[in-house]
Image (cartoon, rainbow, N blue to C red; front, side, top):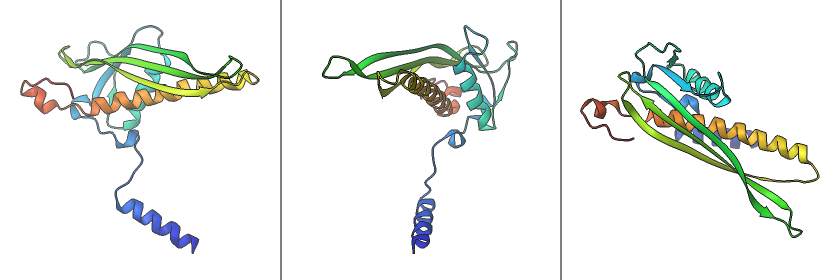
Length: 176
């Protein structure tokens, strides 16, 4: 009986076209099949690595580091993370924080003109602070930072995938 119920639910969910959203559901425009990703600062900051890996995971995007290549360039301008106090307990001690994360990026075309003006991805996550287990709380904060970086990379890819190059060719260079 239980097995039949599970099979019925699986059939209904698959019949409605449900699928988890992820990198595999993103389809880049053919104009972005080859591109370059840049970020100032360190040679391979974690955000740059995350975005490059997410693009490569799509399978239909090839990345180049050749600065002389006439390809679109995704610029990761800045990355900011910080935390604010979210809650204080009855004894006046911090009991929860909110983590803020922001990435500024833009996309230039093969001619160097902006295809996507500078814009930001903003994310927030909340977490409880346990003053008796500081190491676990710090680990939780680090994991949330990694998760937000991964989510930001996916949001950037979705914005790139939503670009409509047909309108841009006709002279209507509007934002997606």
